[in-house]
Image (cartoon, rainbow, N blue to C red; front, side, top):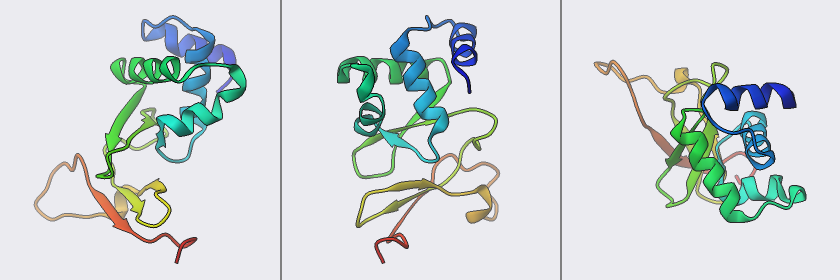
Length: 130
């Protein structure tokens, strides 16, 4: 998403389009997996934003529905986008070796007699660590 589109998206949700908020939203939209606060900080480090500013902006994005926050059981909050190109409630895979978290497609987990799954975490070893 381009800079002006990010500004518009933030404004449409009632948020000021600050440089930090634009960068944080851009990082989440570009990510192919949920990111921890530390990972987001690393990706915006060249902007000179402090860790507290990044965290506050992540929470602001969660509060207005542009991101979701979750913990896959390792006591680390991770943030991911909530746009139409990213499935709603879905399962996540946590590699117990490297700690990487990946989104699983809805088709990866099927449960009989359940109409809506809100949270599933699968743990194991990823291909890179195997």
